[in-house]
Image (cartoon, rainbow, N blue to C red):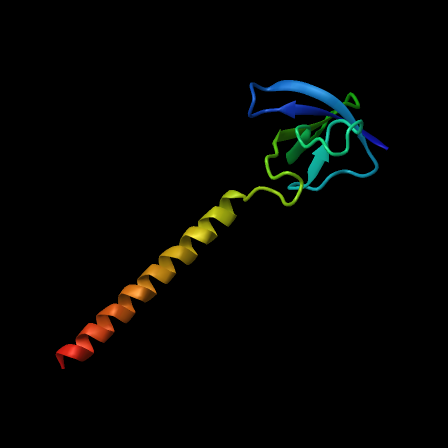
Length: 106
């Protein structure tokens, strides 16, 4: 078992509760701070970083998760990829419009 103290770095850098996990959580996973109420989604956090110290203290840098337990929030690269897809589609539409108006002129 691994014990971690949660650090809420997006909410004033305060430390939160301690969680006991059976494995080291990979970045991007979700952790639940309290096991008391399984249907309560207010205490689920997204893991952004893991820190191990020499003194045996382990920390998880977390931010609030607002996806209600279904999927992890989008990362910055996911947002960039979505923006590129939207822009590519807009350019394709403009290109199609230009080609159809050019065909009408000829």
